[in-house]
Image (cartoon, rainbow, N blue to C red; front, side, top):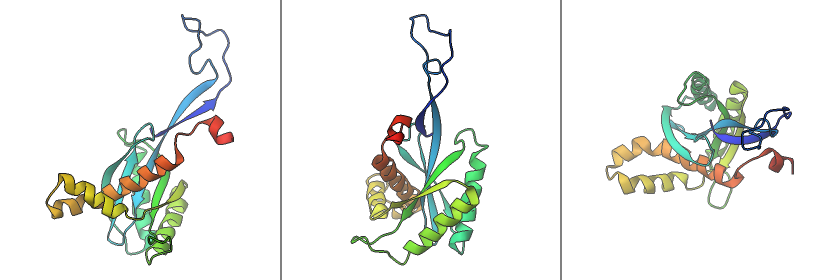
Length: 186
């Protein structure tokens, strides 16, 4: 459920396909899956997005009310991450990508440190790797995309945070590209 990683296994002997080739496990390689969660952290709402099983595409998922502090917000998202373990449609989350607010010139905004605090608290609460991803103009891009399909700004506003999280996650997935064991060792 998420990125496909290819791992080396110990080859088994005596098990070949009818065509003479070896299947994935017999050839020494097998695929594992992992699901990524994208987060657009805000003072009022938190947008969430999920990657697909190939970790090539991100999709908006849902929005949550933010807590009074970044740590309280992280606790709310950690609860969602924990609930995903038992949800057959979503599956366990193995990694999280949090949008990092920046100005166009790359300098920090007043929201940059709270986003870092949120990411740090989320990592501590979940034990997952939490990556920070530059989110410059993600909300504007999300609003423009939603406006193409939804003319009513009230309805767009309800979807905006999750759509922004999907853009943040998609940017992360595009930048890191597909991962394999051999590529990670280089």
